[in-house]
View 1 (tube, one colour):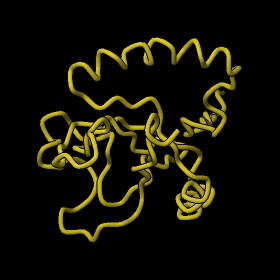
View 2 (cartoon, one colour):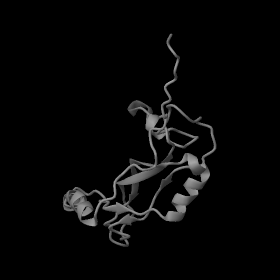
View 3 (tube, helix red, strand yellow):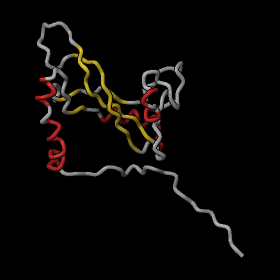
Length: 156
């Protein structure tokens, strides 16, 4: 006679322990190739971003919205037209495509904790329309992701 059994699987994809702590020396080796691209980037007339800062209080506001459901953050890469970081004061404003991070709270199953859109679910051909899984186009905008931290090299 066989005894029925259930397999209990943890549905969690993330635990909040993801990522690794490394030495500053190791981090310097990882960031060095990117920093070496600064001159070429500026010569092409592009804004170069070495780093972006995000404040702890802003992180805490996002975490507080979700309580224990937030086990971490996913960093999406984006591009925003921003002022020319090299422009000389007094010149006409010139906008340049500037790389930016968008930080989104994530639950243990790996879902973006957003209501108005699921950033990771948008397919390449859906990005212009914003249509994809999650969110209604007429939903009121909510402050549910973080972006726009001060940039380095200008605010280092």
